[in-house]
Image 1 (cartoon, rainbow, N blue to C red):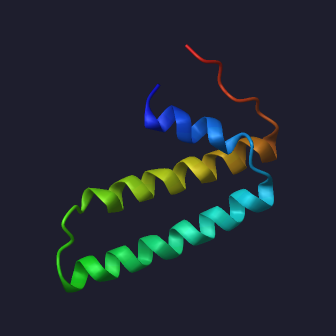
Image 2: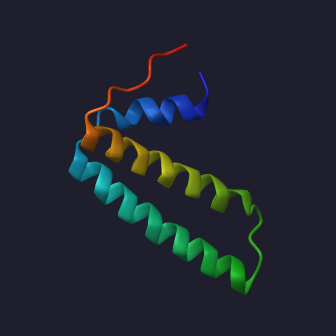
Length: 75
């Protein structure tokens, strides 16, 4: 199983308040990384991209729960 699938599956166990707090934490971490990258290049700028994707996955899970859509079936 890929890391992405593990991440998405772990989101199902979190409550909405946990999800929203995780989004806030990750957004703050992203801002710090972007600021640090602007000052001096990071060793691995890919971490910024991966963090942005994780934030998007978190927000997608929140939206799915708000509209009551079930999680997609595993292939």
